[in-house]
Image (cartoon, rainbow, N blue to C red):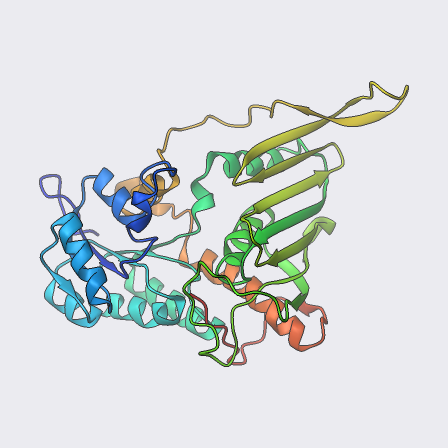
Length: 360
């Protein structure tokens, strides 16, 4: 239960004052709001505190939003402020400790960035503690709120594509930081995976935009490629490596049609009589069938914050829960485990063996 009421706006604090927290609001090309802070302000929340180890970031944040209480140490911030919501926007290497601290201080709701953790052991401990505390935790796998991705889910579930046979997934970046977005979508669409077979990218470029501290850890979050196997013979081909351009795309091929969805939009192809060959059918680009009543949720950031702040009957549904985030991490970790076995297929659930992949 949150501590605010109809007369008082929800009290929010932020850990980590980087791009995803608020700086992207200054990107003139993005549809706003496009950050945690932007969405909170759009929803009428009160920013009461913020934390970052970088003094200049704290100063910039104070000037921009008039937040008097900023901290270098999040433990001190949590001890001194009564909050309704905490956003955790720091690197994944710190998220386990930050979530556990927020639970200790009885913060009612947490909006946590992904990847959720750096190991399955961390993630399991977090999920158990969240369940025990009854805390509402939403994880930043933002495509769960996207109308395009929701449409694709409906197209799959209603059998409009026929039997889904192959899914080709391409993204720029690493398997944990970027890949967990893709793996969360696949889990959402197709359920629990059966197995993964994968290899890591070796000797490739690092993600220059990430700010990630490469070389600091025994293992780095890098790109890779391989396959994920789901029930009903659904095979997903993954290709995720650092590129000099951004791409994030799913190409779903079924027995009756095809759909492509990504950051550049949604395209649907239906099986129709060929205009080139008598007696043949070919895929023709056409309007996607109406699959559900669309609801104007604002940007995905507004929709995510609405879910974080949910009360009453709406509080039961968590579109991107801690359990979902743990599964996305498990799929990503499976690629690293398979690579260590020379690309051998590894099955789910994965064995817990202290395997840790730090990410940003």
